[in-house]
Image (cartoon, rainbow, N blue to C red; front, side, top):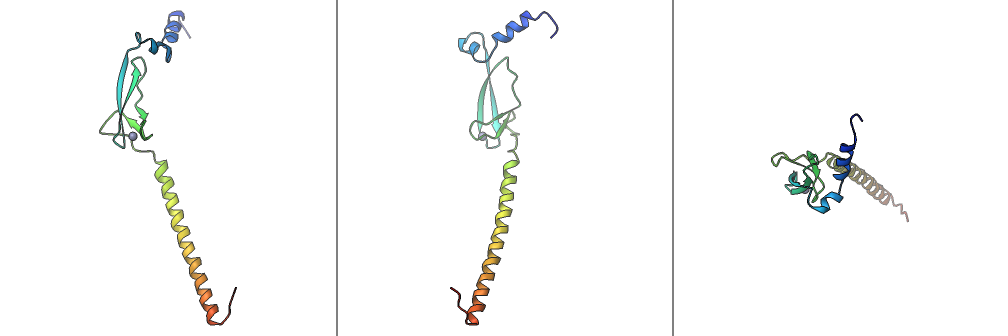
Length: 119
Ligand SMILES: [Zn+2]
């Protein structure tokens, strides 16, 4: 780093995470409201020195929440995609199961017709 270091280092250490805030004097705060896709309002308190992030995980449902109440960030697409895949798989195995059952019944019927008994 260029420059005469000491003052910068000192202020960085002093503004560190929790220590300073607990003294309660030197850490002014700002309350920021985030909105998620489930219409939760979450007020998160930051130090005024902190950069306020554009999005924050909603503490109530875990979805990403944004600063704009009219435009909450959409839920991540991972979950619907998984659900869709599972849905397709379910339908497939249902169909397969139906076919297998059907075949089994037909075999059973045709064998019974021919008088063959299987146990
Ligand atoms: Zn939420």
